[in-house]
Image (cartoon, rainbow, N blue to C red; front, side, top):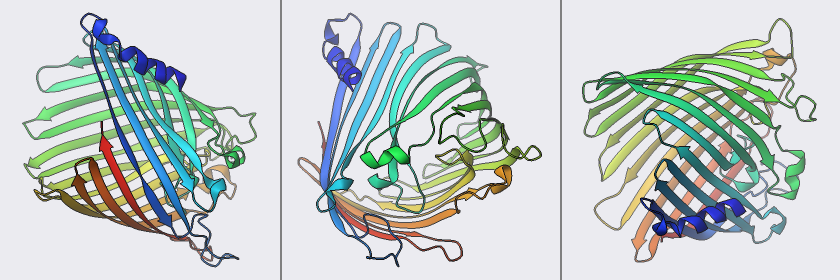
Length: 391
């Protein structure tokens, strides 16, 4: 955090730097949430569910500096949660996106980045529950060459690398932290504008994910590499309808496991559509990703979401959304029975009112797991009051 603080300090002095453009802004939010099941235990668990009230504070800062040949930016957010009764669950999670880019050349991007992100552990529990997240830290860089082929066609080729590790945000995290890994590889993209409203593109990337195989939490499949090819389409059909679609395949190879079954071919899909204008909007999305779960186990992730927002020309607005998510584990690759598949449904509703100091919002949600067979079901109801503003 000291490096981020130093960056903000430097940015406050940049008016003295000739030709530099700098900006600093921030937000702050706080509130209270009631959860019916803070430990996310099954409905028939001995002792039953435990309810609690959670006080949360979420400040953030954003800074940027653009000077001759260099662009710097950093966004930092703190999510602090204090449990009123179950105080041992209290924790702080950090979000950081810090980037530095050398922009001497018009068609070459040379950049370094560092980031902090909370990552979801289980799909059985609410995805944004702080007790269902662990702290990821990563640092890396990329070199990208961009080229335009006329006014309507462009492409890029580059190489990206990133080292990922994990930090303890809570004393209970020691036994559930995922394995560290290094990921790197080349990527290629070409896209073309078809008229004013349609964009077609093709992407290819190769990735190697290298784990520390001597670690106790190393995945049973070891390291893996993947070839991914995707075609995508972006369409602004009308002033009130936009659609984006991507479809492709990933060929994944593992270094350990069954010698006759160390590879998997998986389909990829990502579809998003938004209809409406400034007052009313309807959005729908569905995706399927070839991935590993957070512990490195081979898996496929699926999600679908339907949402609607109504924001009239008034200081208030409201929204509703429904989400379906699933992790399906691929036991055939390892020939070892892994975790049970995890599926959930989520319903959300919120309303906000703008006041002089910011925005006051009320929100409620119901999360329910969809277990397989005789596995127990987990249900969590939450309601929150939140006040936030900018400075």
